[in-house]
Amino acid sequence: MSFEYTPENLTKLQEMVGRYRVKRAALLPALNLAQQQLGYISPEVEDYVAGLLNVPVVDVHEVVTFYTLYKQRPSGRHHIRLCRNISCWLRGSESIEGYLNQSLGAGEGEVSQDGRFSWEKVECLGACEIAPMLQLDDDYYGSLTREKVEEILKNVKD
Amino acid sequence: MPIVKLLSENFGRREARDIRWYRDHGGYEGARKCLFELTPEQVVQEVIDSNLRGLGGAGFPTGRKWTFVPQESKKPKFLVVNADEGEPGTFKDRQILTWDPHRLLEGMMICCYAVGIHTAFIYIRGEYVRPAEILKQAMADAYREGVLGPRCLGKDFTLDIFVHEGAGAYICGEESALLESLEGKKGWPRLRPPFPAIEGLFACPTVINNVETLSHLPRIVVNGGKWFAEVGSPRNGGTRLFCLSGNVKRPGVYELPMGTPLRELIYEHGGGMLDDKALKAVIPGGVSAPVLAAKEIDVPLDFDSLIKLGSMLGSGGVVAMDEDVCMVRALQVISHFFAHESCGQCTPCREGTGWLEKIVTRLVEGQAYSQDLPNLMRVAGNMIGTSICALSDAAALPVRSFLHKFNSEFEYHAQHRRCDVEERKATATPLARSAV
Ligand SMILES: Cc1cc2nc3c(=O)[nH]c(=O)nc-3n(C[C@H](O)[C@H](O)[C@H](O)COP(=O)(O)O)c2cc1C
Ligand code: SF4
Image (cartoon, rainbow over all chains, first blue to last red; front, side, top):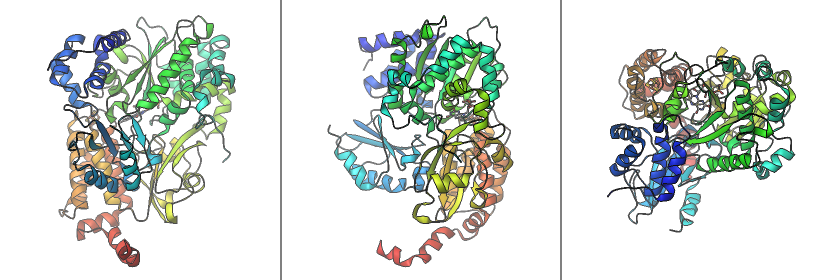
């Protein structure tokens, strides 16, 4: 499946390229934009972005595999990142982990059967005051209990 | 210690994001004073006098750092703001970005005027989607009002600011890895020299400062460097945002003068330990900082005092652990983190972080080999001072401190292949346990 930016995203990228002294500096923003559009970074995205920015494809691939936010395959419609680091661990993140496993019927890195959710454990998300916490799509949720997670998941409509 | 709010006065106040509100409450007065009343040299001098130190973790004096940038340069100079906040236990920059974005922008203006910079980038971690939105809105407002742009505040001074989102990698908080990342590469720290002040972003002179560091500048300029210095302790100017988390009653960000005792932070501001359990250990400056035992908490929280204790103030992330925490498990969580985040460029760090995690995991899982404790110390020893960036040391030093200060727990795991903390908990509260 070939990939192209929407006209709107292409304009955005062109504006971004102008900010930097070298074109390549727009690589992370370009990949972020592509992931927003497609949901993950496919090999076609790598080719396309490499062509736009005059960067060897292998360098693009290296970047995609280095950073944890790039997904190389589709995730669930909603993606959950559960913090596993020290402050969240001290406040019971392992119990939340167990709950996600069980209630989504999907292990870490898997997609739930209905395709709605996927989840993973991540390092510190910078919100230890509300430990244990997770990120659901773009938002942070904290002071989690199993009940609270159930509530959060229930409020996701699509 | 008296409550002095220099950075946190607007936390929790939605209206402070509004540029009109911010300006009506004294906002952008520091920047105005610089642009219209002070020379760049005078601004640098105020910052030197303030004893402001880098609050990203290293504590380097901010004013002095700026003087390393050549004044005359054929190449453009850049400011790069480190908003990659990833040190576990740290969540202060997020508060500034969320509640007081204009304070950061104003601080950036002051720095750029002082150093002669006309382009700045804010490198913000990719997970901070909402804070980035708030920041971009604040920037759009500042451009619209002529605060930023070709004639900042009506003065013949140009400043353009761009937000650059990261993509998930703790190492990109390390300044030279951050520059690599900003140039569109994987975040591999650079060999130094050359230092960023001479050859940084796009090989041009670059100042890199943390969000909190820069956000202090407006007040320093308005109230004077000497005033700021007096708020803190010797050689550690002003206040800082301490991030308290772990087994405390009231986790949160507390702005306190440098030099405030750790005990006060935990027991007065944090309300003490959850369920009134006993304190066992504290990590005083993010997980890169060697751990302290409970008896050490009378230490004043400033850079020099913690170095004297063999630890560091680091990012100001204070993590308190109670008597029921297994220190071997805690170290496993931390060692996993460093193994995951090592960029893999240097052998001692790449291999060492992997081995530390593997050995500590064996101890946790009751699979210890006979030489595991000496081996842990040996692996850690080989990682210190042998690699390109400070992550390697940051992974090794905590291991030494955990083993040194909580030796009996590690010995118990090694010899009995069981956890003494778990056993004690099980025997001490049989009723509570059977009730569950
Ligand atoms: C592994 C590692 C991670 C770091 N992460 C951060 C970070 O997330 N944020 C930050 O401001 N500084 C971080 N630093 C410190 C930066 O390298 C640098 O010292 C700092 O951004 C300079 O700004 P300051 O002088 O205002 O503190 C990190 C350093 C290391 C070695
Ligand atoms: S010390 Fe570790 S994180 Fe730093 S450059 Fe070397 S391998 Fe990478």
